[in-house]
Length: 206
Image 1: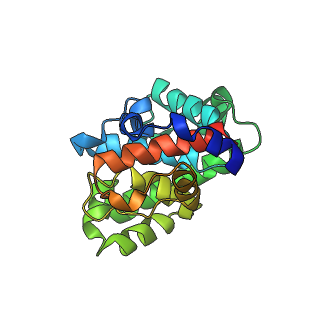
Image 2: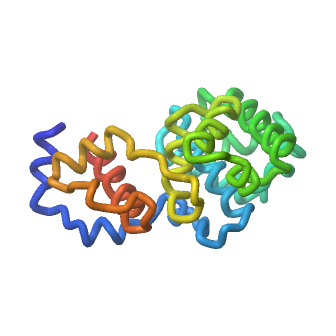
């Protein structure tokens, strides 16, 4: 893969990477508002991105949640497991993980409501520091380090305690095209946009 990335080296412009859409923005999610509903939308999409499915199916499935107005933890619990499996997951394109993902989402929403009154902002306020914030996200049923990273990396500019390190694959792509990420503030929007651009570049070169 390194040879492929090197072939693109002369075409990569950091200024262009700084214009990259965030993955949340692609789906019309406005994290800068700080609104709990917008943050939950991104949390939901991050959970879908973190599953073993391709990005297109994850985004399609999020759109189905949007279509049925299921963008709050209480509403997801209200419709129940059967409705999540079909029509939500089926319309989104899930085939192998529809049962498992539906169960996981219900348990996550139940925990969010029980422990944080359904508010991810409250979760952030409760966290002692960046490490504790990551642990609290990791502690949700079925969420691992990858999903936690996906969610928190775009929250960096908006949550004081959100500051996960870039994924190794992001560092690899940056290194291979000659971008020194250490020269950027991880909490800045420029960094988050560069990171999103590098992730897309990595996907194109798989």
